[in-house]
Length: 35
Image 1 (tube, helix red, strand yellow):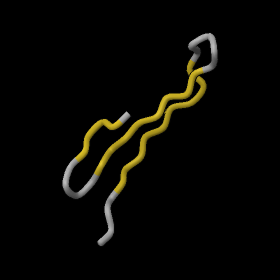
Image 2 (tube, rainbow, N blue to C red; image 1 turned 180 degrees about the horizontal axis):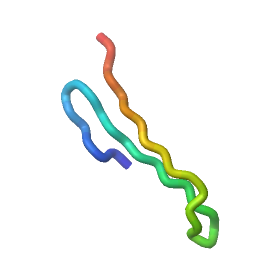
Image 3 (cartoon, rainbow, N blue to C red; image 1 turned 180 degrees about the vertical axis):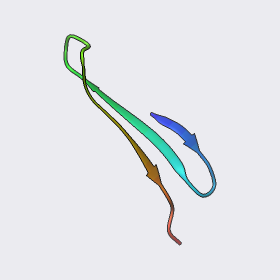
Image 4 (spheres, rainbow, N blue to C red; image 1 turned 45 degrees about the horizontal axis):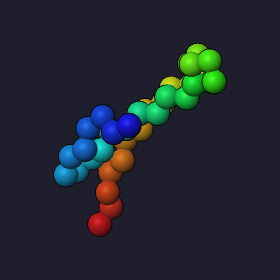
């Protein structure tokens, strides 16, 4: 999911769960457009 999207940067998060709904992994990332 996208947490924040702005003109200069975007912040997103991903959550990975198994079929029982148990958390396996969680990550966040920042994107900055070039050009």
